[in-house]
Length: 295
Image (cartoon, rainbow, N blue to C red; front, side, top):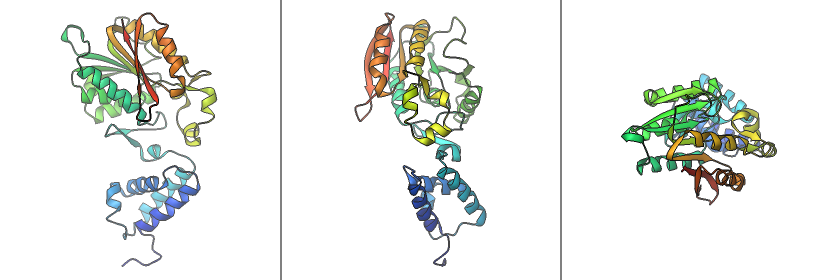
């Protein structure tokens, strides 16, 4: 039997939860469990059958260091090196934005449109461009869940593309995803056209940036978040570029902040090459995905 004062798994989780809570963590118990499971090389669920276990010194040393860095604000996803998205595990580093649940709405809409028989010239594979791919979650999930598509994943950051390539290989879709370094669609061949262009672009305004959580501002790549004074600067360029690359009937799908929906819809409506479609909203009724169809 473990001694009363021994640092069992149960005691480590209890102490760490309180410690992280006092330092402002939004989910201190979850953070503690994820970090301890990672330190042990086990699954979170395994902790609950091991409460009385006293982890060896090397595990506690690793855990202590992770907890220290978490208390300083480092996101858990960066500490453990992965994040779940659409029930798949993706490698993440500080070179890429941490995938968020809101982006799953963008993916679901893309998959729904592809499955509904969206355009593909001459019966060829559906062509998808993921602009600002980051860790590659959209590109990889599209290729994994819709076998009849080929994806071009574009990012301005070579370090982000390296992470995305790892994720494509890990999920067995590397042969159907092409990675291109470039700003929006400018680096693609002039003849490259697509049935779908999807993007989770920078859409945070410079004013909004100052209000974000410290762990976002201090650790996530600013260039993947901030678009400019209004928050619509990158999307405005994307709309124009997408109109040149989409086939007739093709779709542009872009994630947005609810605060800029009206401005983004105005940009789409001002481009005569597009027919706007209803904005996709989340379960809370907040605008998340603006969509438009090429005439």
